[in-house]
Amino acid sequence: MRPKTAVILSLILALTAYVSAAPPPAGVIETDIVTISVEQQHDVVQPGGKSALAVHFELKKDWHFYASAKTAPGGVNLKVKASDKDFISFSEPIFPQPHLYFDSSSGQKLEVFSDKFTVFLPFSINVVFKNNDPVDIGVKINIEGAVCSDIQCRMPNFGDLTTVVRISPTAAMGEPKFALPEPTKFAIAGKPVPQSQWAGFPTWFALCLAFLAGLSLNIMPCVWPVLPLIVMRLVEQAKQNKRKSIEMGLAFCLGILLFFAALAAANIILQIVYGTVLQWADQFRSPAFVAATALLLVVLALFMFGVFNITVPSAIAGKSGSAKSLAGSIGIGFLAAILSTPCSFGILAASFAWAQTQPLPLATVAIMTIGIGMALPYAILTSMPTLLKRLPKTGRWMELFKQAIGFVLLFIAVWLIAALPQIWRMDVLYFAVVLGFCVWMWGCWVDYNTKRFQKWTVRILSVMLAILAGFMLLTEPIPSAKPINWQPYDASLIETAIANGRPVLLKFTADWCISCKWVERKVYNKEEISRLIWEKDVLAIKADTTTKDLPATLALKNVYHEPGVPVSILFIPGSKEPVRWRGKSFAGELKKLLKTLPDKN
Image (tube, rainbow, N blue to C red; front, side):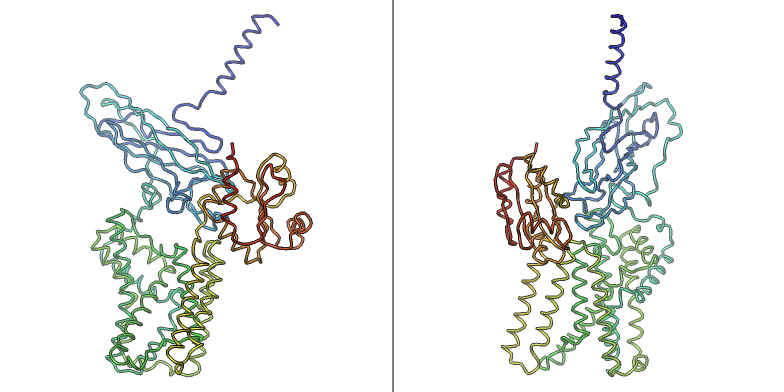
């Protein structure tokens, strides 16, 4: 090869290498998992005009951004923000509607953005030109947020996404390259926007819709748990005078209205203080509320089975007894309203959405109209003693019906518990058994003739046992922000890690092992231990011994010579023998050893 030809070829190869290694063009951020680009709605914007930037995201398969700060681990949801300039003012970003993603590590459904999506940044130009020369304004867009998959999460430093906005008083803005989305399909600043299509309804029509929505709540399946209590009270009222019947009926209706008054008050506080809206049935998205409701249904089922009774002592009968009856009616009305809301039809969602697009006084009236619609049938029924007297007479059929409904309540309680995140589920089930035992103690260990000291001793012990069980089972049920990435048992993977000087942690467990669940909850679900395992690059192995034919079951006996589970084994680089824990309370020792390990590179 001639020298000149060789030099030319070398230059071509060097130029090719430079081009291939050159950074992405301005307005584009590229990583191995996501590509982010920016597009302008108009090439040129006139002074006083409005335009927008579109920030396009393209994620690789199985990766996602968290959409909501409430559900994102550590609150690291996607944030897109452009800083205001002297001539440019940006409005709140418009995010797309997120979709639900089931996170297997926490057992929760989280709101995420994935695949291809766009975030819009509206802006306006607030400048007056003294001449007709165009001005170029550099804009920096800051992007933050965790990018996660099923097996890992990253917090990339994206840097700033840059673009240049040209402002010219003489140039026409022309046709926009894209249109801003309808607010019904997108969210402002990551928060859902009320469904504005309902805002155009006439007030009288919307209030009628709200009233019909309230009427529909009386046939919702979710209200079935309290129907036996309502029927029983109506039957009892049929035996009393008209005044007493009306009082009890109005008290029940008052309980319903109090619930909707609480919703109206919450709507006012959220809009004034926090600038957000109240989403219908949000309370049933709280695991704590769902768990409490399920446990309440268990207690009500025991009441249906006759395990305990709610009675008024004869010593305080009369006026105070009447007051207690009224209070009970209010409480049952409140409970009926709570249970009815998650099963609401679209008509209820529509009326509630319309209420939140109106001024607060009118929104409050609309929400209370829903409550009036639900309460009205009971007010009519209890105000007409002739209707109440036509109800069937009490007898054995009523007792059998009452007990049968107890099983319905248990079925609904199990359904609610099954909807809980996995980390809550078993603990709530165990506590439900203990709570049932405590209720049985309260109602069956004593009777009317039991001495007062003995009666109070038994009931105080039952309450203390329930509190102790709740403290042990229902505290710290929230998974760590960065859960441990457990790998299935693999002998070759363990040997390779030990040979390379990597720490290895084995957790021998089984689905039928109650003590193993305790270890998972009280040791490996702790935030600090989870964080240390990540920081120290510990290979975490979940050795499942649920059945006898699993590899981990054979290794437990033949390799590690352990008789049973739970067992945790930590291999420390440089140590001849691993550290073993066979008990349930070793979180402090494990944390201490993990801190001595070097951080990963």
